[in-house]
Image (cartoon, rainbow, N blue to C red; front, side):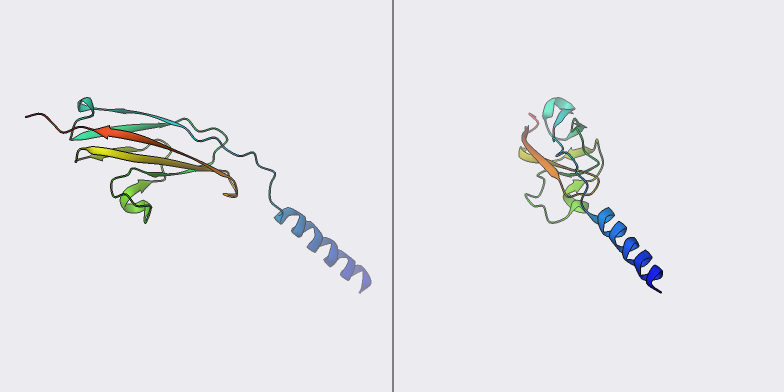
Length: 118
């Protein structure tokens, strides 16, 4: 019985040690972008993720000035594409995470989409 308790206690200690956070380095967030149609509406913008030490990503494209939902205003893709249909200045944010999601970094850049001259 004592050996079983010692084995159980050892197992609990090993599990607890494994549950401690990884000593992950903080990622660095960065991106470049290119747009078609001279950055005039309608404009499709291709985002090139340049983040380092990152495992997953969240993007917000500034289309609704909200971070309420990834499904309507963002993406979890590494290199997403977004289609702008209205002129304006858009605050585009990329947040990148480590594998455990305990460490993260964020960068925001302003993208200007002009009206189409008719």
